[in-house]
Length: 379
Image (cartoon, rainbow, N blue to C red; front, side):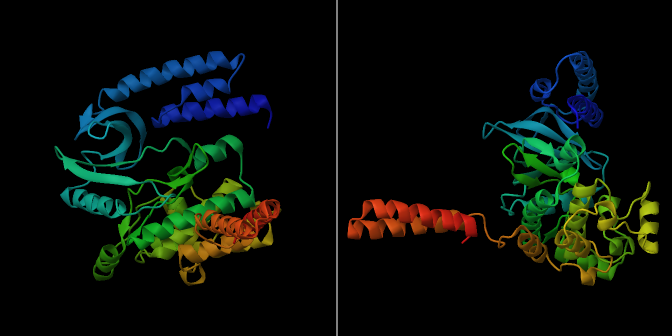
């Protein structure tokens, strides 16, 4: 892509962020824009100021013990703000359910799910610190993640390669496994809800449609209903058919995420929810090989299995999905901390042996060799 095309794409992304009400890091944007496009950027900044003035008229100034500093984004059920925690003296993200979204039962449900999520501690899951209901408005507060969404990155830089997408997939499988282990389903895994933090960490965000596994599955079995919460393009076909959500529904969404990252398309597409539901009913799927014929067979097979219309044919857990992606990447699925711990143990062992025999030069050579071997082979 040419420099001019890159700049045009960036300005288009900025315009979309203004429309969505998302926070814009103007300093970073201005560093990537030069020449005649400076005029366009100045005009966009003026439009953004006007839009913010209109927004702030209805935005709260405070909530609980938080000072609201600005809106980060909006969703179907609530708004997310950058806020300052006056007790801990740090910035956080606060998500407030809109006053007109739902009834007391839905408010109680959000509080319950937020309390579950507050117990989830994983490097690839946004940390939820707490939740409360203040002045009839329900909200939760979480860590502030600075970066861009995978959707923004996809639209700005183009489709991902198989290995890059697989690395994202490993992180997200680990994140979803942690959520499932807490007794929850995420329910809305998509590129818009994964942040690429400055520094490279991928973080799963937005649990607005999360499910309590035991509670919601039991209720659905007793009183079947169509649960369409979530983004239709990522929803598993059995959800449209009215089946109770299970872990494999999140696995399907993870597969769609990888499909989307490498193609900028979706397995089942449509303009409306009804179109997508009809596509699932008729089995009119787009196969990954037809969109990206150059991708490796192994990667294509993994993604196609994850999005199999039959939930019994998919990976039955996020962990199983992760293992397949790790094999594709040529490394075992393991905790991020294993390599450093093991490398440190080898280093200390070799140095101790060297001290006993008094062979300092040999010890340094053995240490370097052992450390390099550990990092290269992953054990």
